[in-house]
Length: 254
Image (cartoon, rainbow, N blue to C red):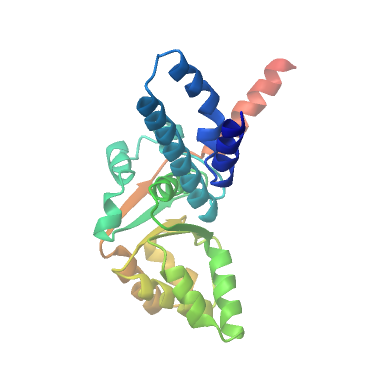
């Protein structure tokens, strides 16, 4: 009993919680002759490794700051027939990360741009590819604050380091020229080094209105569109569909 207690405590001290959790079960199998000692040890180690991998994946997903957890399997491609499903599934295999390709989702509000961008990002994070999600407005706010505090270069390096940076909702609000210049500096740092995933509700031809300068907008787009895949989504809003379904349910209940 003293040896068993020492073993349990040792596993706990080493953080091998899965091995600790299943130890009694495998001791029983070994005593019954249903497993050899080496087989039991191998399976206990495998369970611990799988648990460690899952914990690491979950930590990467948490660090990436996604707004929600949604996967590609949850996306209703039948509702958005304009999307090339094969292309999206291929992107979800993460080949674009090796090619340093950018992905740009373009479409009106509610068509699923953020869902798809997030699902690819989650696959990246679970594959231990450094990933970070940030709304465009929040990104600009952070860069402007860093500029005022004389730590802009440090902040630019922070956002430039991620293998995959997801910038959500470009175009909902125009920005001033200083903000546009800060964004250009970030995109220039990431150009041909890492992958950037963009969602926008504004056609590229109108980005000059967002950035207050067609010249600056073209400079940003030149770097984003070079080595990129563009996913243009033309279809109805998921949010409106869900709202209609809710109202219809309420009407039937009445």
